[in-house]
Length: 318
Ligand SMILES: Nc1ncnc2c1ncn2[C@@H]1O[C@H](COP(=O)(O)OP(=O)(O)OP(=O)(O)O)[C@@H](O)[C@H]1O
Ligand SMILES: [Mg+2]
Image 1 (cartoon, rainbow, N blue to C red):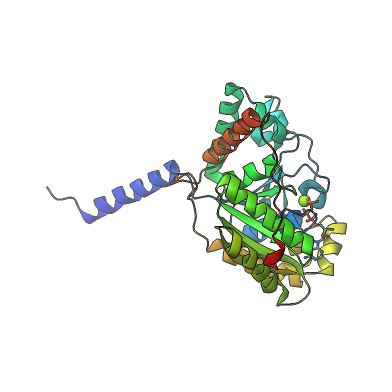
Image 2: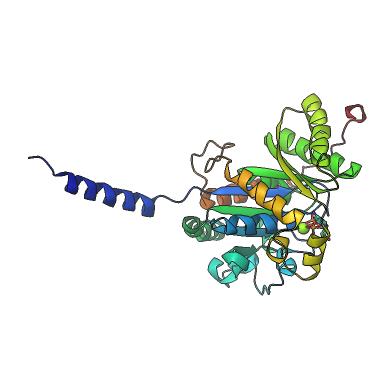
């Protein structure tokens, strides 16, 4: 007996729908880091998140910086609870998530990050499950890491699919970015980085900074750097910080907002959903949290013998 075309089409539709429900969305996990502090990581995280949301993506922002000028402050939001309350079981993950502009979701992590190294097996499972439930509703997870090369920062970068290193035109910024890349590649086997130049004073400055950095990395490290783009120095961005707003919201036609838009389009073209370092063929949040917890547990085990390796950019690289 032959099935009619209508019946075949109907069953194909059903199969498609089922596949959509069962399979998690491909997810991009991007860590924003720098080495040096104060180069604009938090502003970049927020504005990229909002630009992506404006372009139709479901975006989640993880505030993994223990410092002061955090995402909630920059967006004028109230956060009462953080990841530590999820770990202790006082709150669910949904309860600590704060809604930001453009419907972006913000996870305040705060002291919860330090607790990740000491989770009981039950707490581990609880946290992994909490995140895996969210995986179905998110397209992009952006992580605002702290400054420096602490284990927490390196673990977030290691667990992410893409790492954006933010630089600006100051010798310490390039030196610290080099040190960060060196530690990530030599100690953590992360060999692929995107470089974003911030606070540039002219159109050529970003490319020039990228060249300066690649000149050193090509010579001394086995890494691949790609240029993500330049965000110009913009008084409008400063003004929006003062008003606790993101520049892409407050001044959408300003030079920095337009740059964020361009960079977002570029990021959209990056491949999705592969966790290359482990060979995982999925980018689900579940794997991200598993990898993060594993790294933190290993760090805890090794903390007695580990020494923090500092890396100095070789003078001859200049
Ligand atoms: N493109 C830009 N133009 C002008 N000012 C900028 C730009 N980007 C960032 N800034 C300013 O630089 C300062 C630091 O920015 P931000 O807090 O985002 O840096 P950070 O790297 O997150 O710092 P930290 O390492 O302390 O977390 C802020 O006062 C911000 O207003
Ligand atoms: Mg910051």
